[in-house]
Image (cartoon, rainbow, N blue to C red; front, side, top):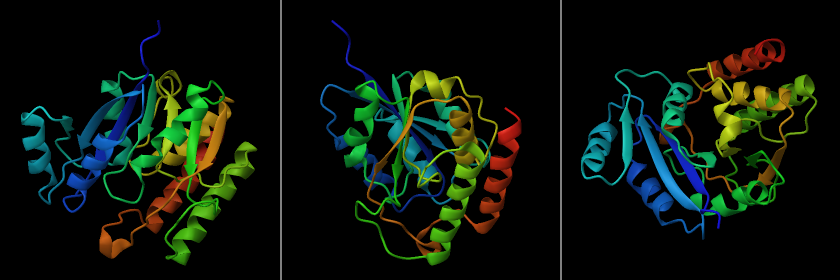
Length: 235
């Protein structure tokens, strides 16, 4: 008999004191049937109390938490988390409440069925609930996805989504160099260049604005464009 598959949930965290307890509860209570879960949290030098809470939870043995000694960025936190991931499948989970862990099962299915190597959860398909706000953020996402499709001959609708699910061997064989939010275009570029089977599925999106703690800015948009162009020609 085959042992049940394990899902490694990678959670990069930076200054999410307002949401961290609730998102941990949501991840913990998700029922995935035969699929087992391991949650790997990396605190990227939070300064708002998140770090103290996570340290307490780690000392209680409730979660596996790793701590950066300085703020390095989302990409760096994910790189750290990947070194500790032992699952067959890997998913990225932000520490806010924009994405719903209850949708894990839908996202895992194409990989468990052997149809996909990678699955992206699209916020922009229009098939599920999504908060209607921030026009310029929407335009930025559309522009970055358009550039991705143009450069890599793909038909993605949401390259910048957090919910990226990978067969573990796929993501672990990609050397991630980006430290910040340019992780998203870098990993997408390398997946598409390697011709992995990438599928999209609609997901819900409960977005927040900057007053509610959103961190990505227009500067990250320019970094993403540069990453898309750079990784078209280098590995």
